[in-house]
Image (cartoon, rainbow, N blue to C red; front, side, top):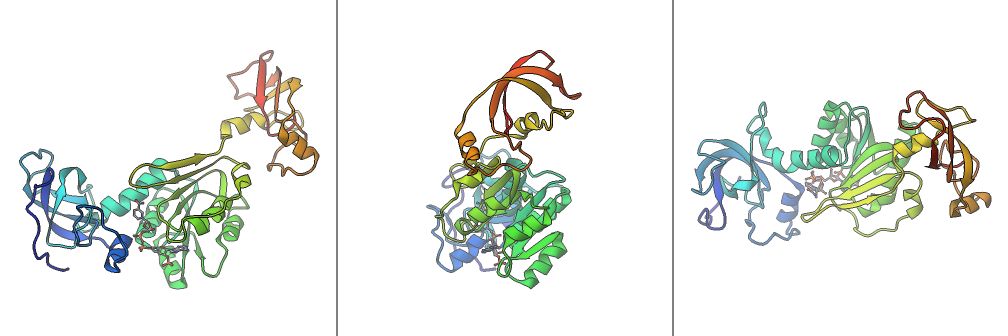
Length: 344
Ligand SMILES: NC(=O)c1ccc[n+]([C@@H]2O[C@H](COP(=O)([O-])OP(=O)(O)OC[C@H]3O[C@@H](n4cnc5c(N)ncnc54)[C@H](OP(=O)(O)O)[C@@H]3O)[C@@H](O)[C@H]2O)c1
């Protein structure tokens, strides 16, 4: 680690604490900064180091949350590669119980990024499937381990067999060399043609369409980096075949694209050969509508959703004549209208 030759007087800008650095992390931004291809935010330290852990050695008198001697970690705008760093008190976090001071250095940037995107926002849950690009990256190595711990089946991409072996050691179930294999095909093969539930992407435009094609019903993509191009062409049709969510994070706000048709709607549609399921209702149709999709289907130019009725009619009104055992909302005789995946 380099010594810091001088640093500005602490507390001059805002309410700060001074941390004696125990450990710092190596993030992609640090490597970009070393290559001179990272534009530093205004007022940021010119030294690398976006996160660190250590012990508080001095506190601005306006700060009440922290005291000298506290073991902490902090998100920095730079300057973690030093013996001491001054940081606004609001960017300091306690070291979580059971985590060593050294490991805590990767907490503010890597761990918080993965947790807030994949789990808090994209709602990855036990029993689901998850694809992380760049599995051997700082972000990827943590994402694999935490997803495994949460009972998720993990897919990882990386650019060499050595890196893939490392991903496997960390717990990845399916490892894909993106330089030799088309990852969409492998994902489909491993999921019985369905796709994964959540994708964490750091590549951007070159993967956008492929990521959409790799998602299951109600799939979610979170984009945290653009290592390829930023602009791409999109086949918008792929957003209409099932509900999908695409989110991205920046310093200002998230972008959200969501397509309609949640699982609740789907359940209502699953009435096959007039045999209703536990959670379905049977409607005696009074009227139906003519939508553009019906005319396309008649011309054979509409790809039917898997499991959808082969008959026309995306919506209808009528009277409920039979109700599944698990349905409490509707009863025989109710006059209703319904959104269908066909068959109206
Ligand atoms: N938005 C945020 O809050 C936030 C926070 C932290 C990080 N990030 C972003 O997250 C990404 C990872 O950060 P890091 O610090 O962990 O980076 P890192 O350790 O430098 O790793 C970069 C990774 O990108 C992978 N990669 C590059 N092109 C790829 C492709 N075409 N397909 C699959 N993988 C590809 C590389 O894989 P190979 O080496 O195998 O080629 C490498 O593992 C970066 O894009 C970073 O900007 C975002």
